[in-house]
Image 1 (cartoon, helix red, strand yellow):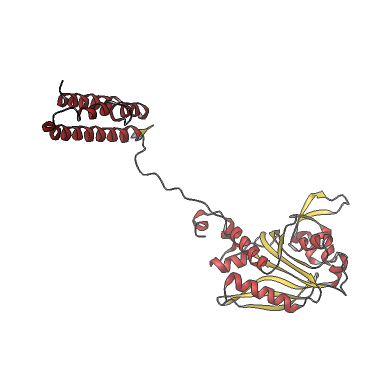
Image 2: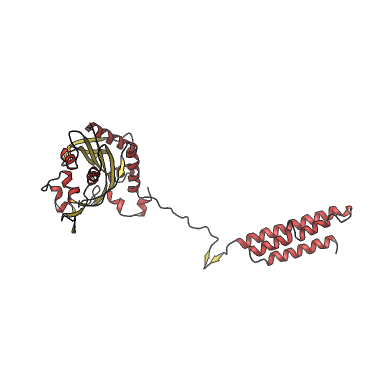
Length: 333
């Protein structure tokens, strides 16, 4: 059999072997047998080129390259075919484009809380946490709220009817994050700069700006020579950092049992003012309750409504939208 016949036979054998290969491993064996560089039938045929007369080498060389290219092309085509998934699996055409996967993201209130912590950290305040189920000492007594104060009315709080502390005092869902400042001051000596962000509970009438469960950011600073000017500066810096340079806030005189003097904090939103929290200088009675000397240290505290800042930031007019779990609403953030 001359060289041309051997090349023709090689082509036929390689074509048959490639078509018969049912999977990738079988096809790899075919490649080694017919196109292997170290050993294989193509290497043997290549040796024939040096044994034919000089006048036949151009013809034989051309035919050799044609056969090699054809077998290589057939192998690549077959490889793509055996590696391609079946057109249909359980009646599903798997070659069609898939449905894009929609990634979730953090709730807008969680995003707001994260940003609040970041801003206050830059102002030197450390984030702390406290329990949502509280006793009356931390929720009322230590905050200078007397027994006959309306804030202690069972109709204005969520008391846990079957739960009591070891001393017999009832438990309730905290109505403010101010409870955390008491817990921190009981265990920590000044100076203190902390913020606590979390849920609070009040049986308010539900409307576009009120909810029975919402989030507060409690801030506390205790040191020597802390003044109301420090409080107003921190609040203005915070509001500007979160809402931008054009935000307008105001302070109105008010009363809270645990601060003296006290102020309400409002921000301008369109054609109206929206209350965003309360603040003031920590009452000396509160300082004495936790063992501080009000003649040596002073401080301020503030509580801001997280949802109301988020409403202003995201242009949401109804607080209830944050908790209705409507995906169409949540996908906007």
